[in-house]
Length: 292
Image (tube, rainbow, N blue to C red; front, top):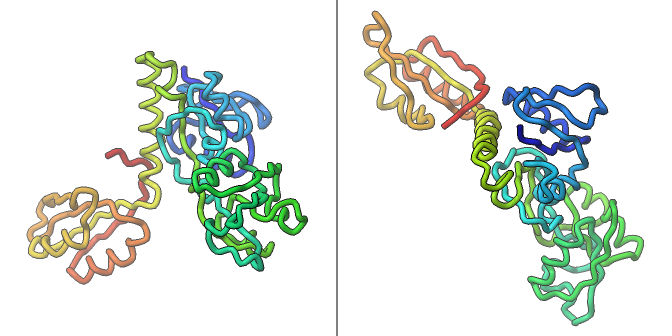
């Protein structure tokens, strides 16, 4: 049974639990503060801090883990990404004070003097500026990096943002994106228990189960009866994954049934277009899983 390290708190934890539950791997713990749990009886979960998960996975304490890609990169450990889980999206950016006049990374340290940069991600920050050939002194902080320039602790920050509103609120503006992050399923390089065929198969089953739920999100299954004479136009309206499925209707006469997967955001327009082509009996349902 593979051991999976999951975040123990916060929004990342909540969304991870929801994903596993939707994939049929219900999180069954003895209580809210339990450190371990069963995942549908198929896997074992251990709950640890998101920032510690790369270490747990790399050291073999867990066979796989779910954590942010920013934390994986900051850890510096050799991990393999198997699946982008699609939530926890954010960006790690270079930001400067609005009155600094800095609009490009090339302006940072342009006089040859090191610039102090505050960040919760010192390794990523040092690596980024070294690759750009910019002289900086990295100031590690444990949180609230955006306040550092106002306290004189640093001139620049490298911080996480989703919308940029917190940076703007603190008189900062984005200069450049360092890294785009989201929750990922990772293992040690080479996979869990390298060389163990059974463990590799279990991991593949996990990736398939989670991936099927992720692909289904934002998609809808649409069915409708349409005149056979307008099938060519219908195919242009309903491209689906590989084109719509067309089924003859018993005693349907001039009508056939078409089925297709369509993005949820397109359902309203697709229904309008099908009705204009004479479609009847339209039905739209949610999709729980989608395996290509």
